[in-house]
Image (cartoon, each protein chain N blue to C red):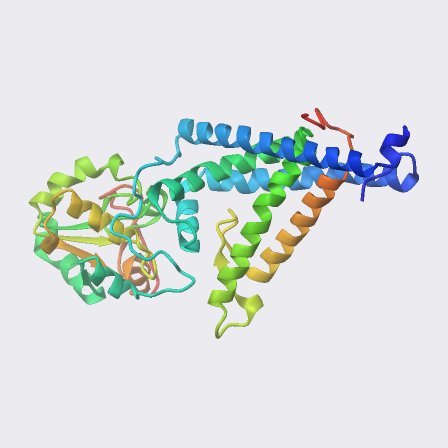
Length: 161
Length: 204
C-alpha cells in the first residue's frame, strides 16, 4: 500500500495523496461548519440516533464533534499529522456509517432501501441513504489510503511524532 | 531513497504503526480540547449541562413508539387541532392578549412566517425572550404553542418550559398541526417581527 517514491507509480501515488487529503479535509471542514453554525439542529439529530443517553454526554457530542471535524479537516488540508488525523477521521466515519446504516434499516419497511431519505445529522440536510453510504465508503477508503500512504507533498508537518 | 523506506521490516512496520497510533491519540486529545474551547467561545455554542429537551422521554425516530398526540398526552399536555387553533385566533380575547400564541421555532423560521401576533420563544434558547413573554403568559387565560407540526417537538419542549416556569398546565395548549397545517389551510401568515403587519399570501 505504501507509495515507493523511487518508482513512477510511487510518485503518482504520492501526488494523488495531495488532492485526496484536500478533498477529505474540505469535506470535513464544510460538514463541521454547517453543524457548528446550527448546533441545536445537530443536537436533535444526535438525539434521534438514540445511542447516547444523558444530557451531558449528548450535549458534549453535539457541541464538540462539529469543531473536532473542522480541526481534523484543517489538519488534513494543511498537511499536519496526516496519518494520525486520517486515522482519527476513519475512526469517526466507520461508526457513523454503521449508525446511518442501522437507522436506515430500522426505517426500511415499506420503502425500498435506496428511497429512504432522512437527515443523518451530517450537516447536509436530508439525504438518500444509499448516496450517503456510498459517499462515506469513499471517504473511509480515502482515509485508510492516507493512513497507509506517505505522500509528503504540500504538507506543513507530515508527522507529529 | 534509503533501503529502510523501500523494504520495511516487521519491526519497522510495528514502530510505524505505533507512531501513527500515538499521533492519532495526540490529534484526538488536542482536537477534543480545542473543540470544547471553540464551542465555549462560539456565539452558537451549546451549554453542556442544560437539558434542551425538557420532558422528553423516547428520542428514537428510527423506532417511534409514540405518535405526536400520544407524546403530548404522556407529557401531560393538552392539544388543539386546526379548528381549535383558528377558534382561538378569531376569539376576541386574542386581541386583548387573553389568548396568546407562541411560536416555538427559531428566529429565522419565525421571521420567515408565523401566525399573526404570535410571540417568539425559541424552544432551545428560552433565555433569549422567556423573561419578556412570561408576564404576558401569566396574564393570559389560554396559551397556544406551536412549531412546524408533524414530528416537530419544539412546541412540546416550549410548553414544558412554560410549565416549569410556573404557568398552569390548564392554560397551555399545543397546536399539534403547527405552522405546516396553518399554511395548508390558507390562513394568514405574518412575516418579520411580531405585529409587523406584513402578511404573506399562502395558497390553499
